[in-house]
Image 1 (spheres, rainbow, N blue to C red):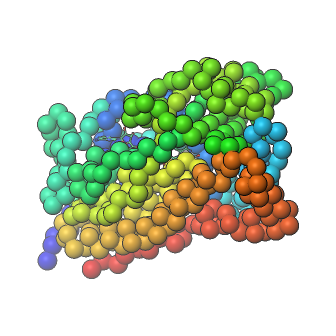
Image 2: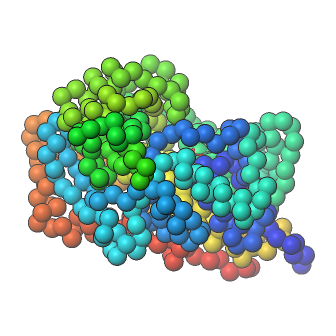
Image 3: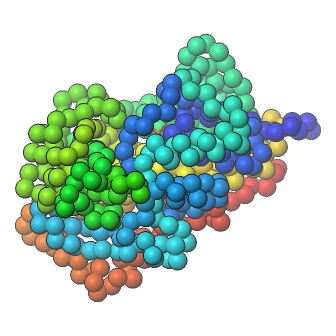
Length: 415
Ligand SMILES: Cc1cc2nc3c(=O)[nH]c(=O)nc-3n(C[C@H](O)[C@H](O)[C@H](O)COP(=O)(O)OP(=O)(O)OC[C@H]3O[C@@H](n4cnc5c(N)ncnc54)[C@H](O)[C@@H]3O)c2cc1C
């Protein structure tokens, strides 16, 4: 017999979207949580993020949907246009459709706002739960102990590694193979709408497709910010140096990447204050997600290309599923009981995240067709499909956006 404790405890490595949402999710289920984030302060770095209805359902269940809607923007539609001509390939309405068809809105928001909303909600639920400037060096998954870079240690029942694409915990416990350079770079900028004059992009989540590159434009907030992401097949020397939010490229270089494109794209580049340039790396999902009391979540478990705008949303789904799967654990340090929940979480999440990862890769190919017969065939199929079979185009999205992890996640009975 194990004697139950007051409440089970979790140590969470990383205060990105996944780490904060996991902490909030566990805290709402009565866990005591501590989040360790190596950066000393949350900064307003980064750019925008699209929160699809599947991610919004988690934010709703965590009680922060209202605050997200206050700060975010609801796009009119998801659309694809040709980069050079601006010609529309397809448009799928979402502003008025998403709440009915997928049971939650589709929202654009600045990442800094999303992180702030999650962090505020966490601190309201669990004051003192967040430790900034705390870098986790190692995890002892048999004892439930983490060691920080200042030499101190913390102990808990569960260790959640939400430490992102280059997860140190994944390298230590599961897989230390290096990420693969995709040969693509991502340009990123946020531009005040009033600087764009008549060349303001549409109020949609718009993919502008072209040979070997694509751009994504969308409005970010009611305060009038427009987000630009440009993905270009291009190799940089020493690509590892450019996998950071704060590395900038030159305007001249970005304009050369999109030379001859629609002014709604090039004006964004011309008027941007800074143009972040990021190398896109890729890696397969971790071969295993659970070791002892340690578990992976978010990009640490299943990094994916940004071409489906789902990485963050999958981190939110993980956060909910993990808490649901371990909620029967009562803090008795009964390793078998906790392990059953963690294994259930991994088995439940692996197929969906792998499928979404594959679809993101397929999109990267579909957006970058070379001019000529291949592009004509691909884009006219999409164009025709959207006109003749609009329900089929939407049905493709149903599997992603219509999914409701808050209803689907298993709850694992106590052993
Ligand atoms: C160009 C681009 C566009 C994207 N657009 C979208 C989109 O529109 N919609 C969407 O859903 N997704 C999008 N994504 C994906 C999304 O950004 C990621 O999937 C998401 O940020 C992953 O969140 P995470 O919390 O798992 O990891 P991260 O955001 O990487 O957070 C990990 C955190 O852990 C911290 N950390 C790391 N190591 C340690 C340590 N040892 N100790 C303590 N702390 C540590 C880091 O500092 C960081 O704060 C996009 C990605 C890119 C690159």
